[in-house]
Length: 51
Image 1 (cartoon, rainbow, N blue to C red):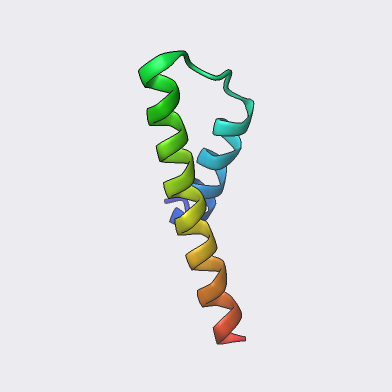
Image 2: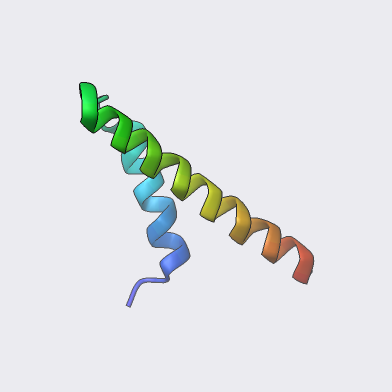
């Protein structure tokens, strides 16, 4: 099974390359992207505290 952190990073990359969707989809994508970014940042901060 793939590590969830790696999967999150992959999702984030997919967001970068995917074309911006019009209207509602664009807003939803941006919301999802920001949520992913927040989760990644949270994860990275957590890892920083451990080291």
